[in-house]
Length: 400
Image (cartoon, rainbow, N blue to C red; front, top):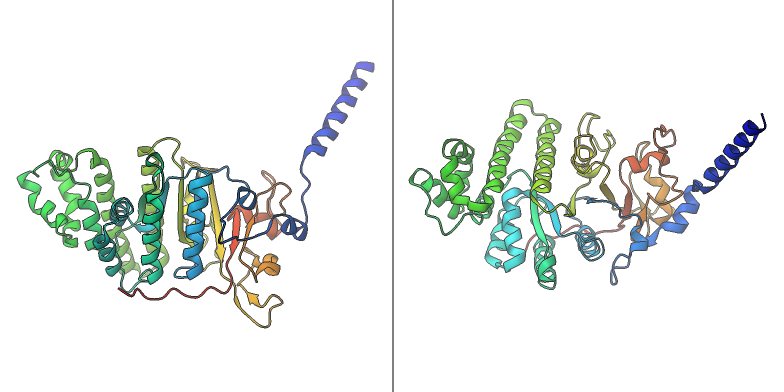
């Protein structure tokens, strides 16, 4: 009986100690006062400001074509590359465009940059800021040590065929004369002729040996590219037959997930990634809050599923762009709802701010297996950081 009493006492003491060691959940106001940090555009992001960085894939979600979105992307690239050893940049551009721009940030080939930009005419990316961003990235990459150069990977489907074909042609082994059966196709690729892309998947099936010889050590990437051409045709087919934008864009997110998983297999095991996408793609949990149905599985949501090689290693940074509103206490406003209650950050709408939501004692995290009845406590299911960028001007059209 005495031994039982001692054992119970020890268990009670242990329970009290463990409870005492657990960080207490703070109130929202207290937490924000401690962790919200004004962005320092001149000196960059510090480890303290970013907070927990124990991730392998970092994704920021923007509203497209905002000037501050471009500036924030530069800031994040510098932080992740210099402080978190991220060498691979992933983009919401086609796989072929990734090959083209990876070559650009190594060589500075201005003709390829301008060719890439001209094909973006009619899209939100056709902007002076887009052009200047790539120039900045080239200059920045030249300053990096040879062993730590940045690399570009395009994850989207192939919307701009001609520049995509030019990018793919850069993977060809120039020391090899293409076999007669595939020579017309290869010549069209070298001529940046986008019409050749539709013939690529079939050529891969009919002439695998000849295609492998033509692409040499890059053959696996060319094979994945051919799959992406098939995904591109599927996107347009679904869009035409169903007139369902949500179903069509699901094809895009599926393709982006497939290509990142492929890249993870091909690249060094320690490889880390950062990319900036439209904010709907970086949400890690299904929500109808941004106009899509609950069964629309976004890119980041898929990366957190059980079969993902990076499950639990994905950090999403939601970029909010509050707009001027004289009726709001801060002078700025941003849409809010039950799922994503951005009004919690209203006191910071008036300044460029970075807020990590995943620090100790966070009121934005709920416990393992615990249902989040408080909307604030469920925010980290969707994203782990918030970046507030008020009053941003729109990007201006590319000047050529």
